[in-house]
Image 1 (cartoon, one colour):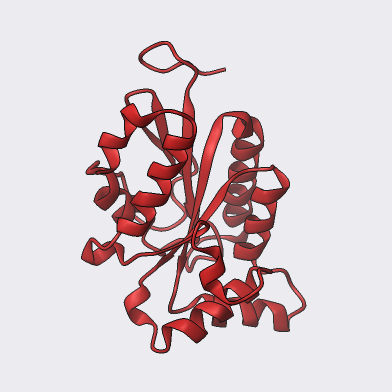
Image 2: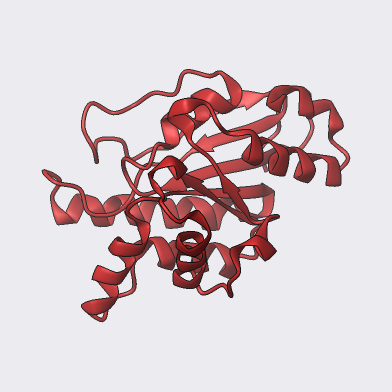
Length: 205
């Protein structure tokens, strides 16, 4: 059990996603914190963490294949994320999985054509196996052309039934680079309100 600065039991929000999907940029936009970024992909194995009062925010290492990073290191990163989520699932209020809107479908399809489970999809189902509340932050939304149909394709690849709009409590459309993160802020605030922690809403206004 981890206790926060006010000696309450900590609740936690974790952010995870493939390398280069914009997690660090997103966190800077969300809460105004400067998030440490590794000099090159695959360097950071430990999560970056900070407190908002007694709410712990955790930026997990980026996962997936990375150029210039040995396969063994990629597996190390994956294992460290899995272990962290398993060990801390009881206190995790919300898991925010960030995906790249422009490349997600093609990436998943390439893995599927090799009869392999795409790591993004694997983590999505793993989070649910841990009985965690999961929000998909669809980043770089400005890269989509036909937004409605392409978002339907994304939810299908995750094993969810289209149309995507029926999942508005589980999907946030964002463009972190442009500061367009309002939908994700609102979903996080709704979770905090549900556990009667309106005192924390100020951090996401």
